[in-house]
Image (cartoon, rainbow, N blue to C red; front, side, top):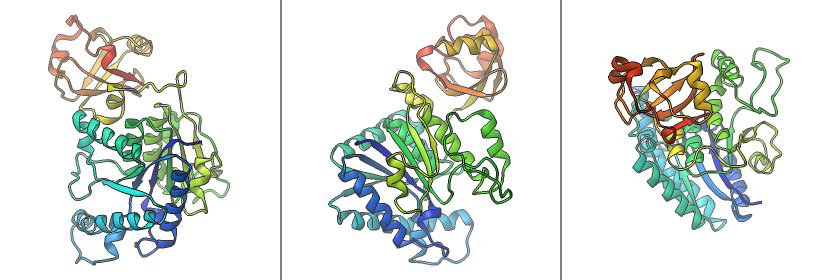
Length: 356
C-alpha cells in the first residue's frame, strides 16, 4: 500500500566510529527507500550527516564548537546531497534539496511555500531531502534537532507515517545501561505528561534521556493523525520493516478523530509551525470549555506569563501547568494583565485555537 512517509535518519546511524559517513549503511538506506518509492509511496527524507560528510574532506583547527559545526556543515552539505543523488540515480530516482531554518516554519508565508514545494516535488516523483541550515541557524531560534524538523514537516504535508531511524532500539521502561532488566516498549498508545517527565530525568542516550526530544516530536504527529516508529537504523531492512508494520522497535499509533487530523489548514501551522511567544494559564472551567472547542474568554485566564503582542501565538497551560494547546491572541499581554475580565471579545477565538 502506497503512503506518504517522512523518514528521519540520524547522525548516529549514518556515521562510523571516526565520525565519517558509513558507506555501507548509507547505501542500504537508499536501497530501502528506493523499494518503497518503486512501490508507489511518496518519500520525504530528513537527513543528518552533513557534518560527517564534511569531516571526510577537511580538518579544521580547533575552533569554537558552534563555528566548527558551521564550517563542517558548509563543506559537507553539498557532498552529502551529491552522495544521495548518485546513489538514487541507480534506481532512476531524482532528489531535491531543501535547507530550512526554524523561522521558515514560524513565518506562515514561508511555511506554506515549503509545504507547497514539497507537495509539487512528490507529485513529480522527486524525493525532497531536508536538513536544517546549520550555517545560518541561530541559537535562539532553531530546530531542537532533526526529529523536530521531521515532525513539523510531517504535520505540514499531512503525512501518513513518520519513521525515525536512530542508533537506539526504541523506548525502554528503564535505562538499559543501568538496569539489566530494562524492557523495550513495543507500543505506546499515548505520550503522557508522566512519560515525558520520566524521560526528562534520565541521562542515558539509549534509555529515556535521549528520547525526550523524540517523544515531544512524536506526540505532535500522533495528534495530527500520523503514526510513528522509532527503530534501530543499522538493523537490516529496519526501514522496510517499519513501513510495513513489522518494526522491532517502538510503534506509536496515530490519534485520529473520525480518521481525520485535528490539524488542518491554518490550525496545522498553529499546532506545529509557530514558535509560541508567551504563555496563558487557564482555570479548570476554561479548560473544560476549550476541550469543547469553545473560544477562550478573559474570565477563564488565571495567569499571564511573558510578553506578547496581539496576533502572536501563545502556549496554553491548564490549571495543572500542563501544556494543552496553542492559539493566536487578540490582545497583547499588557492589556490582558491590566483589563482582566472586563474584555468583551474572546482572547483567543475558537478558529485560532488548537487544543491537543
